[in-house]
Each structure stands twice: as C-alpha cells, then as structure tokens.
Image (cartoon, rainbow, N blue to C red; front, top):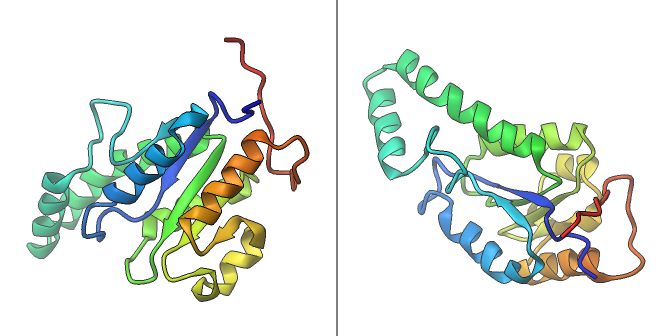
Length: 178
C-alpha cells in the first residue's frame, strides 16, 4: 500500500535569499522519496514554461531593487507569486524547509494559506525544531515539525504505508485508478 502515490506535494521554502536558490534540498527530498510516486510541485523547477525563477531572475531582481525600480520588481514578481501560490493551492500536502538564517517571505505566505486550508504541512527546521518560532507550533501540529530530514522522511513513509495513522483532520487521500 502507498496511499501517497499520485498525490501532489508542494516543496515550500526560501529561494530568493538562499545561497543555492533553494534547489539542493528540494532535489534531495525528491530523490529520497522517489519510490513513493508523489507528484512534486517544485518552484525551482516549475511545471510551466512561464514564471521561471532562476539565478538570472534573482540577479535581475537584485539589480532592479538596487536601482530603486520597485514597480518593475512588483510587475515581475506578481505572476511568479500567483503561480507559486496556485501550486500550493492544488497540492495535497506541503514539505517545507525553514532555515532561521534565510528570509522566507513567500514561504510564510504559502504556509499560512495551506494552514487555512488545513493541509498537512511538514516542516523541516535546519537548526532544529527547538529553534522554530513558537507561532509555528500554534499553527501546525508539533508532530509535523522536524529537526532532521530522516525524521521527516520516516513520517512521510508512515503516512504512505502504515495501516493506522492519525489524520488530525488534515490527511485525506484519493483512490486513483491506475
């Protein structure tokens, strides 16, 4: 049994200020959970030819902000924001990476929206769950906040394969025809 097969997961975390653009941890997650046949919504590798965010995009945004071209920045980022929020909206659950040293403005908006929808939001905190904002624990069940990737992966596998799980009014599954 793999109840997560064909379900959609949004990989949520900082990009703009992340040293690698947020790519490495997303690739790692997809690699570690590849056997579960989850559909990944990855904002670093969007399923579209539009609204692309990459090093070139981030450099253009940085230089535009440095020149005070904030209207240009707004017009460039608005469709990217809308597309990323749409991926979050149509996902079945989120895996989030938070690093307390990296600003994560879009990430916070995506978490907030998904929480209002009562989606499962699995959060990996780079510096450990003990360093997470207390506000996060008020939003998300503490059992969904992890200090290590290994613990998060174990939880995902538990949800995918164990007969009995705690749904917390967040985990809902579809039976897909093959």
